Image 1 (cartoon, rainbow, N blue to C red):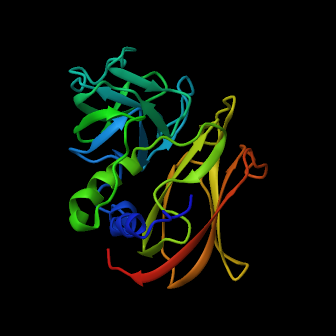
Image 2 (image 1 turned 90 degrees about the vertical axis):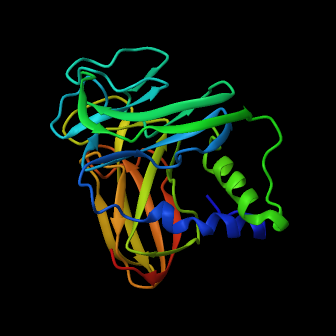
Length: 276
């Protein structure tokens, strides 16, 4: 996905680059919303992107140690008995096909959301996000927020929240969800991966219409890094010297050789080095 065309929008988007790409080294296992923050204001329907670290994704019904799938708890607390299966209801949304995101359509008003990661049998792990509160301020077809240069901070925040939660076009695609083409970034940085039309599944258990992520990093057409995320991971942390690179994200079958979807190429511009 390209950077915003407008100068104000591009400046606003890049103001938050470090926030979107900063690695989390404090928690080995973590699940969180990668595009929503506490007290965000969004229009509905809106995109919800999942991020899990330290575990892999496998669809429901496929048992494999260290893997599971996502659930969203809407306006409801964590289960009192962590050993019980998560129920199927309007307040307990299951993503048992190995999805990396969801589009929610909620009425205007205040809502709470929490991600809960569970095993093949919908029994929760002790892995869940903090509960966040969001305000749905209207319908997606209402007038979109715009940035006013005279009130940049305030209107940038409104535009940015709306942009992060904007649903992507339908179809089948693979994408880097938290960094855009040519966007300068400080190293080390984390990239989050998304896929539509297929589910993610770690290698070792077969499931229909699933695959896993694989990436390659090139500098001047020479490959300098690669990784096969056959464990079902949906994000990666990279450390690269300053320079311009091509990052190629692939979504492949269990062999790691056959592409299930066209790869996404992203121009990476590393312009700074940070200590973790």
